[in-house]
Length: 177
Image (tube, rainbow, N blue to C red; front, side):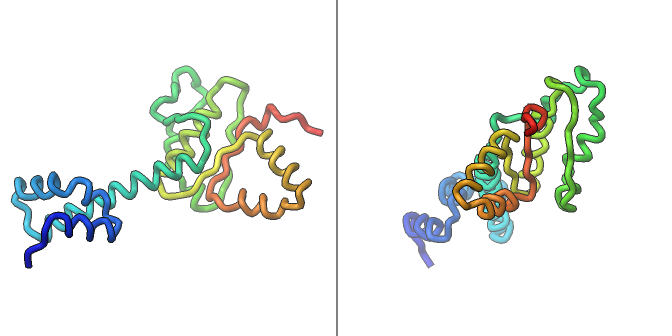
């Protein structure tokens, strides 16, 4: 069965296999160079497609989370903050607490890296296929007050309950009435 290149690209598009479609010639050449069997080639192509879909899922989840900036655990200066236990942070990055619906509260004075750690942990949680939403306490309260005034408080609370992890930053900056 002879299949022309354009037909194959069309099928890949129809099946939404964009990673394979976009790199078809390169991937097939690589499979041939490595002398892969048809089954191994199919597995190789599937791995590439899955990797691309995972990258896009993570990229989209990072946007949806509304992090104000990107921070990673590798970028945290534990020497400057000796009160922060790197072992405990690495344990938190595994996200068992998220799976069990537990809360984590990061406490400390301004400038110790609470926001950095919260964002970095949130990004790790996304990589483990959980949903995350980041907000500040001020923005959260404002949104809830506005929703209440518009008679949409239940709707807003439902929205806030959807992500597996809700990060509320800057709690200490919010005046209590």
